[in-house]
Image (cartoon, rainbow, N blue to C red; front, top):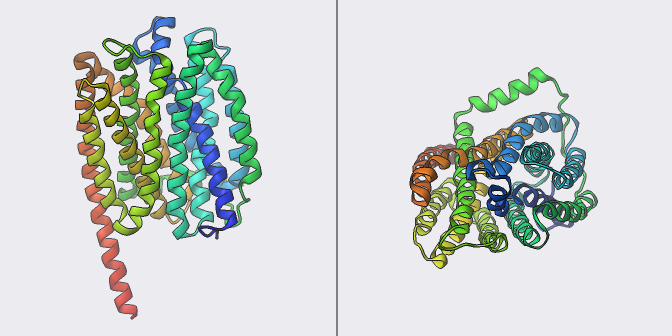
Amino acid sequence: MIEQGTKAYWRAVIALSLASYFVFAMIYLTQPLLPLFTDQFQISPATASLSLSIVTFSISLSLLIYGPISDAIGRKSIMNWTMFGAVAMTVVCGFATNYYWLLTFRALQGFFLAGLPAIAMAYMSEEFSPGALSLGMGMYISANSLGGMSGRLSSGVIADLWGWKASFFVIGIISLGFVFSFHKLLPPSKRFQKIPFHFREATNAMIEHVKNRTLRVAFLIGGLHFFVFLGSFNYMTFRLSADPYNLSPTFLGLLFLTYFAGSIGSTVAGRLSQRWGKMSCLKVGIILLALGLICTLHPSLIVILIGLILICFSFFFSHSLSASWVNSHVMFARASASSLYLVSYYLGGSLGSVYLGWFWNVWRWPGVVLGDLLILTITFTGCWYLRNVEKREEQTEDFMLRRSG
């Protein structure tokens, strides 16, 4: 197994982090462009948000394909080829002549972008030692936040200089370097055990995971947190592009520098969970997420930024914990379980803007915060349930140790 601190560990972590950075930059590059889409294509904010929602929805469906296939034929090759496909579709998006073609190309882009997140966590859970997994997962998710931040920031600046189409061209071409680096750095799988692909067996494995109540709750928590996070940031771009703020795409992109806090949150989560337990830490993350949302109700841009920093920190802190919890509680078909978690995660992200759109239309930003807080009461309840599961596991482990002693 790959142990923490070894050369193989750092090669794997760097490779997966670069790939994660690349994938999430491509997913989120349209977020600061949403107000531009409403003006150029004469569409509503909810329709403009589809340029992001359709990617996450496409990813959520595609994850069901990549998990079982990677269980059957391997991890690294699928991640390589899907990343090349994602680069190609990113460039193609720049040639879209109308909004409907843009949505079509973004959906295809989402299909290829799903390859890495569907498989990366399964690769880590197989190849990394238990001690290395939590920290490795935290660093991988840190790269999620950095990639998402960079994609948003760079696309906003590029769009201000040369138009929104240039954002796709430039980011797509630059991303080729990340793909080649990933191919060279990632160690081949050594502990992978091939499971021949049979539709019935793959379906049965997923059904068994879905039947597991604790996994269902973890899937729900991950999905609802992304539901809140992505939908909130979508509508925040509309809030801050209007009076009295009137921020340009460049300055809207700069807002996503708050994602640095997300990188810190996901890394800290891995260390704290080793001491206090994943679900105890997750409760704190949910409370901080709620506090961040409440801060954004203040009209001061400085206070709003503080709220966004807290939201980013607590979201990635929580996502790292729930993803790690799933991987540590699955004993078979890990890629399929990871895929199901991410299906819930990205499906939640694709639906958040739809749900929050109703609150936005009625009460604007205060309505969005209200809708978010209602969802967080559900995730906190789920976290409380999983913490009780952890306590029972700890009690059982202590009993077995005393008995063997």
